[in-house]
Amino acid sequence: MTEPRDVGDPIELLLRYLDHYRGIIEKKLTGLSDAELRTSRLPSGWTPLELLKHLVFMERRWLRWGFTAEQVEHPWGDSADNPDGPWTLTPDDTLDGLLAQLHAGGEFANQVVPGVDPATRGAAGGRFAPDDRPTLNWILFHVLQEYARHAGHLDVARELADGATGE
Image 1 (cartoon, one colour):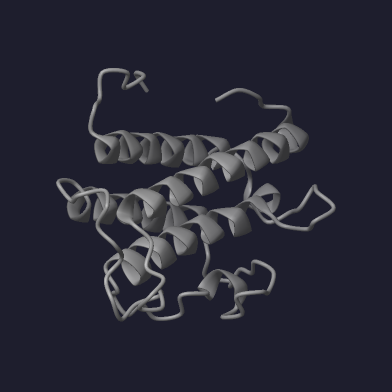
Image 2 (cartoon, one colour):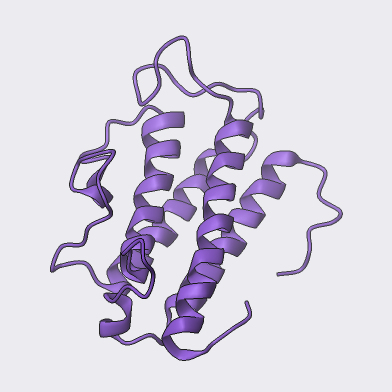
């Protein structure tokens, strides 16, 4: 990614960085065997594929269910519909399928968000209470920090799995 140092629009800047981090997540996961994708190397117990599924659902919760107030089925599907539960997989979860969903979330953001005032609050009727709807700017920044944080987690998991380092 070329640093978007000349971008003045905060929404465009956030969207570019979100796209960048989706690419990093994909790169960190691509090349791992299915066994490595489903094996935890960390005391907390999450697997790389579970983390990917979490990112898919996290973005869906914040943008589709949160900002646009779209009614989404199983918003907590990354944790067996328990917001406080551990991340889970189903036998049908695959790297290719979850990456497709990750990129579909990015396409949704890139269609819905451009041109919207950063101070626009999330729509009523979705994830947020009527008197506690965050701004688009806050939502995008939150989603970006989730991606950045978890990309760092994947850096460690990937290095432990096969020694690969770097972006």
